[in-house]
Length: 386
Figure (cartoon, rainbow, N blue to C red):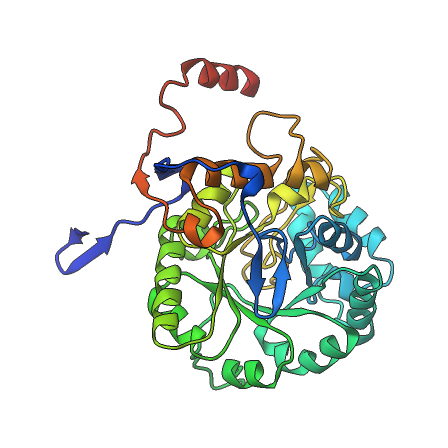
């Protein structure tokens, strides 16, 4: 229901992960008997978890390790891995830069042009280890890169901007034709980011295989503060999932909905899936993996923007191996490790045999879900903060 903000201006209430909870099902299922596989086009993944196309999270080595564990890491073709041969030295510069200088340094480092031979080399580094390779491009370069990344062996192409629509107005450059790109591509095309029903429905109609949901929820992203733009992830996911349902009912091809950003713990991941997502894309949690290239730091894709940075470098530390983050065993009690275990356990409690059934789980508005009865935990957290 809309609420009145002032004369002639109304707003719809939207919800994030901390404001909702899952309702247990009438039947429970053994987590070991639950199917969490998902598909993007013709590509099938054992785990419904992707690692964000951010330089502090994914390089070729990380992509290989993620693939071996059953997930999928997306390599940023506009990042430092495709600009520099000795990318290790660049990572060290970013990690060692003082806070007051890091944004300027990032802008300087990302002025080096992307090199096509490095794009091919990075894809080949992943593919020769026998795992799937997904790559991400800005819309302006996607059409020109389709041929080279296909030839190099990539399996999925992600076209990613802060906000993406099927129609874009500009007098200075040509709009990317998503329908043409999807029609000409042998690879599944995933596009993002999107948070609105009608925009998602129009994008789905172009023939893309997947849509990323989320504007500004990521830990290293400041888009919501800088631009004031965004929709909380539960509402955004539910709206895009509704578009997927109506698209399929009208005879459209399957489209994978991927909630992108804002998830810190297993409970956030389960709520994203129950809100209608087929999979999730995570950044900051994986940036804390021992295998991540960022030396315990994480920064947003838009941070290097020379005009208006919409991200910041954050210190996430190095908390666990990638295997522990994904599959456990968990060494901490905050829900940031063994994400797969959390998904299967939640699905079992809610009586869902697969992700499609889990999307039908009842949700309740529960702003006190994280604090109710947690007096001693809160006191302990305050003590640790001091």
